[in-house]
Image (cartoon, rainbow, N blue to C red; front, side, top):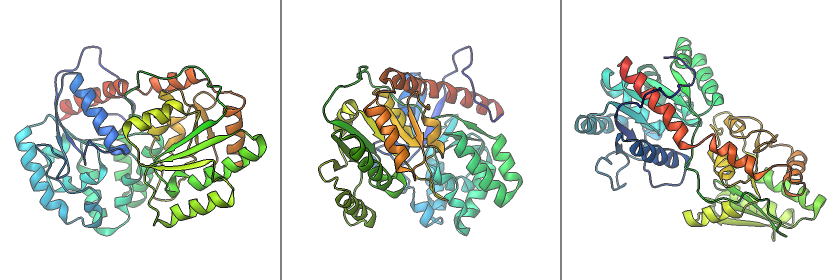
Length: 389
């Protein structure tokens, strides 16, 4: 197998029995959206799809622990591997696809033939975090050595993981480079979206992902204050997702809002329903998330930028990490330096005041990242993996 993109075969792929190993498909984060979209798209194409997830997820094969348990206590992987082995024996899958990275820690305790028909999707930071501590690192070495094939959601993610493995284990990094394929995330496109540039008095700016340092919330606030001072255009900046008021970072954000006199311009919405989220996307004029990259934390791809584009919403995001691959410069939005609020404010002006980004171009970019296209490529990978097993 090569490290280039797989292309859909000319004839329809045969029906495949697939076991997805994940946390839950009912959540709202990247892991959950990826797995849910993958399951639905594969089933729609006629494949047999079973899901093995975390206890309490209401599925017949939900026998695993919460995924980060294996990071904090790797010893638990052994007992969970026994349970997973029973599920594999019952389902008898042609392909096992682990869509939540920490569950790969079960692989060292499974037979080689099982590992060889396993695919692991690496979304970002959890591709390298297990290499930081001794107990986790031992298991990571073995699963990186045993697993049949890897998917990375961006070229950046592939490069970071390859470099980390090469630094620690030399040839294993080269093997990963050869044995991994970049398949960018895909989304289920909403049927309804607004193709026309909105002419509203108050601009709606959105950030989805929680009030967290790596989302660049403080950096976004600095840019909003500059934009407000330079243009005088009224706006509401809505922050969606976890916002624990006992979290020092959330407190810092509240303080920054007061310091910048943005009390009437910023709304911390917290978690919202799916219907509310769709409404926020549908009414947004700009998606602003200057995500930060730090040594062991980065945006693997940035699916939220594509989700916003699907509604015709232009985006502003970082010029580094995998997120840059989710933004088509000057087409679907702009890539910026998260530490440069003046630059961010300028791009906000280009979008909100000058209308330089066409909503139709945003939608076109999102269509290039539809879940159907992603699954076509994954199907081809499954076929090659089966042939090699």
